[in-house]
Each structure stands twice: as C-alpha cells, then as structure tokens.
Amino acid sequence: MTSKLTPDTKPDKEPDKHPIQRLMDNVWLLLVLGFVIPTVSYTLWAWIEVLRVPQATLP
Image (cartoon, rainbow, N blue to C red):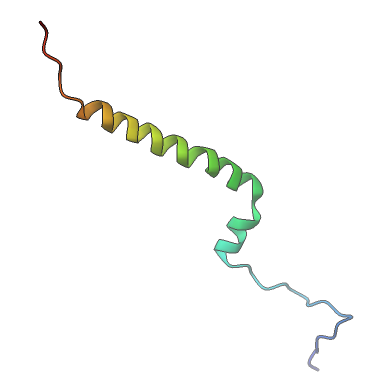
C-alpha cells in the first residue's frame, strides 16, 4: 500500500535540509560569525598595514 500525502497528513520523515539552509537557520552561529569575521579581517589588515610602514630615521 502506498501512502499519499494529503494536506491533513504529515510525511513520516522530513527530507534533510541543505547544509546552507541549516547554517542560515542557526541564528546564534550567524551572530558569532558576524562578530568574528570582521574582527579577524580588520585585525589582520591592521597588522599588514603596521608591517608595511617604513622604518623612521632618527635625527
């Protein structure tokens, strides 16, 4: 016997979500990534800029 889905019935097993969909559904992970990614990228950018400054000559 085959089971047909009608608006009143629910499937026995819900289909797996796509990995990107699972990521977008996790609010706390998105919040943490929203803080971590800019912090790391701007810190790295600042270190690169500091290392690129030429050495000053003393009088």
